[in-house]
Length: 114
Length: 112
Image (tube, rainbow over all chains, first blue to last red):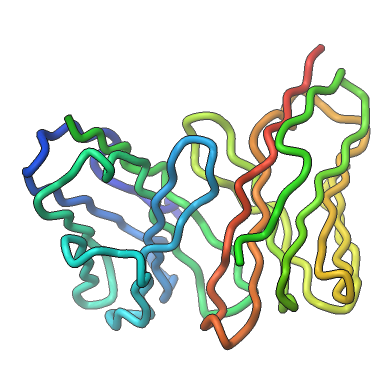
């Protein structure tokens, strides 16, 4: 069990650029979540996968955000045409099965949009 | 729909006790508690299912009052390592596809 890993840890980009983040969950976990967290707030749900299927996407998420989890393993989160409001910590978490299972979080990717 | 945590912040001396509350306006299926230290990922503490059970984790325990739609986290004889921000995540069940909705957090500072 090597834990959930995210890459990169930090990303600085200019407004309008596209960015992509990667998350490698714990290998036997079938659920993978993406959250966004800003200073002083709890994690905000973005989307989640059960295996390779994206089961839910937040209604608050603009079309500039897309996520994939090919083959049910690692996942990528892409933000197109970044805006300053996208600056936040992007957290990935994985779990085994569904309800009442504890989430294992990665250390996150800190995005700064200039 | 976001649960309300109180207090927003608390400062304690090492060895003192603290209570952190999490209240929801909706009926809850379960409550999850996590602790996040600055610059680190949130770490799981415990899950409480409806039924009023109380769980413990070292000197940290929690209760879940289904009727009041609230949970409380109890930190006894606090240690320096307890410092961090505590988040509750609430599940309202299948209507939300079992998604966790997170509170804004309670920042806990322990002084020696």
